Each structure stands twice: as C-alpha cells, then as structure tokens.
Amino acid sequence: MATSTAASGTAAGGTPGAPRPMRADARRNHERLLAEARAAFAEHGTDASLEDIARRAGVGIGTLYRHFPNRHALMNAVFQDALHTLLERSRDLVGAEQPCTALVEWLRAIVTHAGEYRGLARALMSASHDATSALSQCSTPMRTAGERLLVRAQEAGAVRADVSIGDLMQLTNAIALAAEQSPDDPELADRLLTLTLRGLQP
Image (tube, rainbow, N blue to C red; front, side):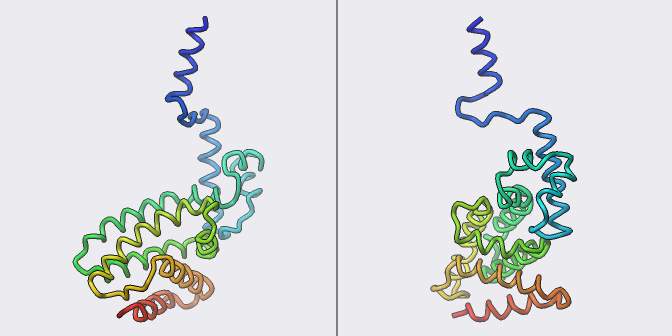
C-alpha cells in the first residue's frame, strides 16, 4: 500500500521540486482570467478594476489573487505573448547590416506595444527601479535584448559610447507615455524617437 501511495505521489508531482501542474478547473480559471484581463486592459488601461476582471471571468477576487498575487503579476502574465514577439524581433535584428537602423526599429516596436495598453509605459518605467516587481520579468529580458542591439550600434560608431540601455529604455517608455497622452497626434512618437536618437549620435 505504501509503495502504491509513493508511486502515485511521484506521478502526480512529477520531478521532485518541479511545479505541480494545475488541476483542469484551476487551469480554466487561469485562462479565463488572462483573457478577461487582456480585454479589460485594452479597453480601460492597466488600471482596470481587478474585481471587474474576476467577475467577468466568473470567479471571485480571491481566486484571481491566488493565480496573480498583485496587479503587476497579472500584467506580466498578460504581456508574455507580446514580450516573446519583441524578443524574437530583437534576435532577428541583431544580425542586421545597419545596427543603428535595427536599434531604432526595435525601439519603435516597443513604443507601439506600450501604446496598446494605457498605463503600460508608466508601469514599466516604475518596474525598472523595482527588482521585486513581477513586471521585472518583462523589463529584465527586454533590457538584455536591447543591450545587444545597442552595443552593436555603438561598435559601429552610430551611437555614443556613454549611452546605457537603462537610459534608452526609460526614454523609450517616456516617449510611449507622451504619445499616450496625445492621442490626436499619431506622429508624435516617431518625432520624439527621431529627436532622441539624434542626441545619441557621436
């Protein structure tokens, strides 16, 4: 009997120390919460009510917090697909013949992504100073990807050597935030990005 219990425990738990897989009902709740959060953030911005998200997903607020302990954790989960796309794009661009053009293209993609959700740029700027924030799981790999592109542009002599990826990411988020505050000027982000990059040139 003891042998049977141990075997079933191993099967259920898998590799010792590995995360226990979600039950089917928990997985459905997780997926519904993500879908409703994505829709709510797109419609109302990242300050959308978590209570409303839980209600629309058909669960209580306690269930939401069991899956996502705070707003940044939920945002991090919602933006994983976009993060994956941006990281893939950076890998495609790292071998481009014109490193500065590649860097600009990638920064423009970040501005575009941040503009899809009102409040995202502000949240990312805040998380960049807080390693404990769940959103650092987005900002940290983004910084690493951006640094590769920046170093190539610097090595090509197109960007000043004293420019850091931290400053560049903050500038990019600030541009996205400025564009968010000026929805009637769709060209603003491009203009500000162009002005910024002129200032980065040697």
